[in-house]
Amino acid sequence: MPVLRTARRSTLLAALLCGIAQGASAQTYPAQNINVIVAFAAGGIADVVGRLVGLKVGERLHRTVVVENRGGAGGNLAARAVAAAQPDGYTLLATTSALAVNDSASRNKGYATEDLRPVAFVAISPDVIAIHPSNPAKDLKEFLASAKDKSFTYGSAGVGTGPHIGAEYFFREVAKVKSVHVPFTGGAPAVQAAVGNHVDAVVLTLPTVTPQIVQGGLRGIGLASATRNAAVPNVATYGEMGFPNVYSGSWVALFAPAKTPDAIVSKLNAEINQVMKDADVLQRLKAIGFDPIVKNEAETVAYFKGEIANWGKMVRAVGITVD
Image (cartoon, rainbow, N blue to C red; front, side, top):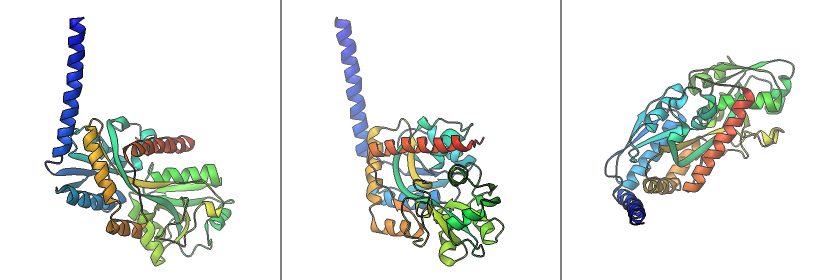
């Protein structure tokens, strides 16, 4: 009995000390600069949003947030680096829905999705279908009607990206039309191909296409969202075009190594949520087609689990896998 009581006391003491250590780390955090590794190249949606949020969070915490772009392998290179980093809150990952897509679509990630824990979702934007202004189709209904008898080409930012998976699911499983995917090395070259009328359509996350839609270089014909977007108010949703409950888009979120202390994750979540209520941040994001996301820790975890399930369903339906 004395041995059991001693063991129990040791266990309780260890738990108490762990709790004290976590509390102390949260009170002193951050004691140095925070590194945010962006999973995609400069200028992309993860980079633009990640830098804006990082700047504002740094101001609130009185520390510099250093942003590093580490693109490659559909976001897996950066995810792998952060998953293996010290779980101390000083190395974070800024990524997109690609992380949820890669959970089922990527065969050789080099890490497990469970090696990362979601800290906060910050913004989301729907995918959009856009066509050249010379195309006679005035809207998504007309475009798809003309495609019933023949195949069409559409460009994306690459094989296995969220817009690619979403487009394949929509065209194959919902609209039942034949299409040929033309992958590009990023959103910008895909937009250029559409503007040059080298592909019949382009499917990308809205901010990548917003300038061309606003300026008239492309015509937006469908948003994969429940409501219209303030950046392109004249572009109808899939639901308005007769395809309800079909949603596809990209969010931007911050993740930490899985073993990062709860207290630090809680502090970061709270600070980021405050940033997402900042009027300047909201105006800048809405102008390019993003809507803010504010979720507490439990909601953040639940949302990510739901995203993994939703993207997994689409990936399995279209049968796309990438190395």
